[in-house]
Image (cartoon, rainbow, N blue to C red; front, side, top):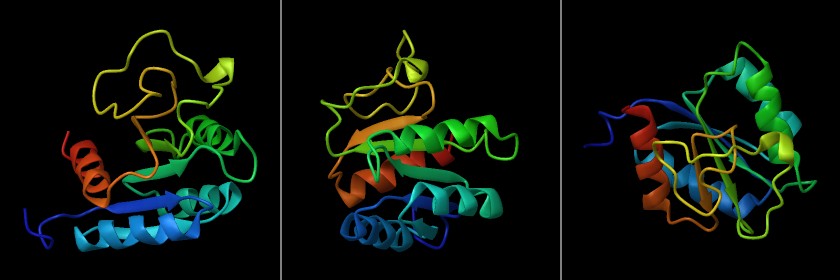
Length: 145
């Protein structure tokens, strides 16, 4: 698929500025309009104003649960609850998922890592660093369902 055929707005929320830039460049090269935020608060404000087609959200930012808190706020807001969220973590194996975010069964679909089936708030999960090509594949798959 050529870059000019792809369409979609992606919001990437991550406190690691280097990974944020890599993700932005990969998604833009694939034809997506990309917006970035380095904090949960900034990301929530952008999500509410932009209403992106998909959000890529780091789990551990300023606090260990900031990503969960952002995902929960997105789900609680009627304006953002239907936006697919891809949650990521550099420490996916060690993430302690708060009980209120756990689910008992695997979710069908795009699961991409060790958190698959453990979070009720996300469409897909992956462990950082993800290759730029894999990130584009995940976003493509979500937006072509």
